[in-house]
Amino acid sequence: MKVLIAENDPDIVKDIGVFLTEKGCSCGIAASPEGVLASLSAHYYDVVVLHISSFGPEEIQLLKFLKTARLDKRVVLTYEDAAVSPAQMDASGIQNLRKPYTLEALFDKISAVGNYENVENDQLFYFNELIVDVRGRTARVKNQQLELTRTEFDLLHLFLRNRGLIVSKVELAKYLADGCSEKPLQSSVLYAHVKNLKKKLKFAGCQNYIKTVYGVGYRFEK
Image 1 (cartoon, rainbow, N blue to C red):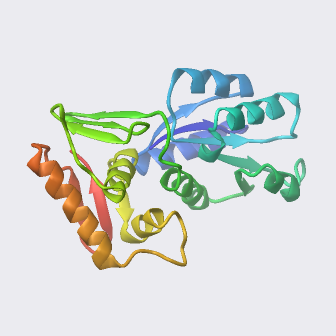
Image 2 (tube, one colour; image 1 turned 90 degrees about the horizontal axis):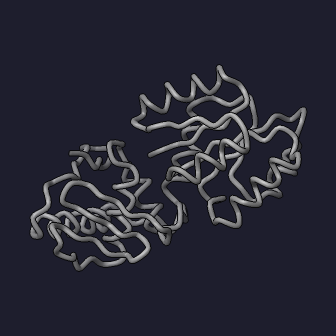
Image 3 (cartoon, rainbow, N blue to C red; image 1 turned 135 degrees about the horizontal axis):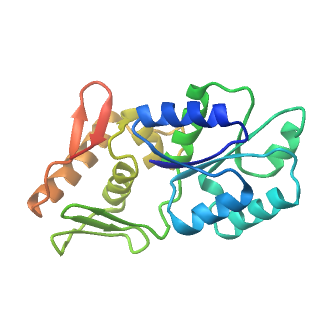
């Protein structure tokens, strides 16, 4: 995943950057609302970690932009009780995390946002011989279009967004059930979907990028 960090404390930014890099993420840094806008205009980010200090005019304008551009589902807001109330943060309708937080807690929020993001967006993924058009919901290998089911396409999209990272069976089951933890897919059904996806990719001439991490889940890697 690619993460934009817009925290207000340079030490926190450094700690987050090191931690996420160790988790296999790539990170960008923005020091102000204007910097966030500039970064989002120039690059694609899977998740934005954005500190809210007071809901001032610049922050409100940025939040309005994120919602208008339908980017708010990719955001984790952080805040301090002394400046902003939990009720204000919840009213924003955006995932949020109160300070002080642990890096593990932040990563859980980032993973949730990255994994359950709506698949209907404007992305194009290029990975060697594999091309995935998310908006058009098509996947091609060496210019040959794959006939994927909705579930198989969603799996492929999730693996590509998290390439290099382990995606657990539990995360996959929840994701394919639209994030509903009460109705996760059974392991046997999940295995069948992954197996069918791998078979279709191989038949089209794609390398075996989806690796099984036994007892845990899967990882998409070269």
